[in-house]
Image 1 (tube, rainbow, N blue to C red):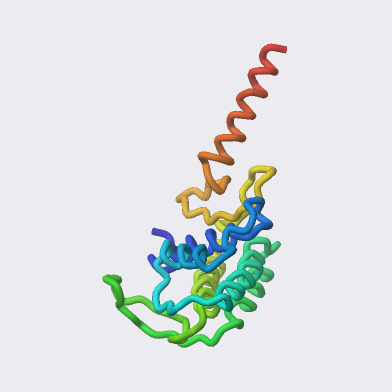
Image 2 (image 1 turned 90 degrees about the horizontal axis):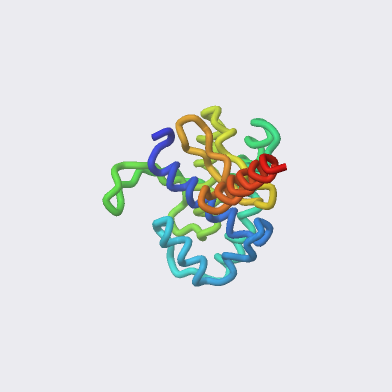
Length: 185
């Protein structure tokens, strides 16, 4: 494990959050409260109360701030984007051991809105990545027609596509067919 359990869980949430935006070619995947609830459940986001339309709008707005870290040209730009992200919410670090997880740090203020909660959790996870010199693990899919983000947690930093079964396979098949056409010519 390269990062702590909490950081890796937050990074997975970040990928889903950014990739839910309509600009990633998928259409709006976070368009209603049911979709927001599914995101919260899928990523086991703790201490979340009743979700409202305000939460939905806040989380939708948060995506652009998170995506800026992936699109940063260098570490300094990434650090500025992370600082902007975490400055959006009140931070109150505390140790907790809820839901069967060992002691770990929560950064968000109890009772915070979901957008504030995710802003701090996601921001701190991204801060750990940047501070550890691993920013190159945050990238966009290399498929030419895909804008989705990914976090490469592979040992040798070799992950190139958001999903090997779709983008990766599609490009490998296209390359194979091109080699076959070139061999026939």
